[in-house]
Length: 88
Image (cartoon, rainbow, N blue to C red; front, side):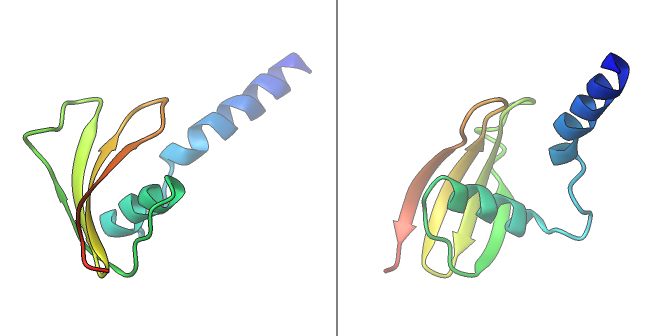
């Protein structure tokens, strides 16, 4: 019984890593921005911020219809979102 519970827990923990391959980077990063409470209308482009990225903390610049964000994806923590430019 403990084995089944452990196996179920491992599957649930691994699920976020198994993102649907059809999801674009824009879709994934914009969902992070929205989860942090920011508005992203129609994500246009997401580009990796090479200067601020390190192996365990990826940084992205996300251009939406209404704003541009810098998004730092932090493992095991909330992501850091910074508004670079707001058009509305």
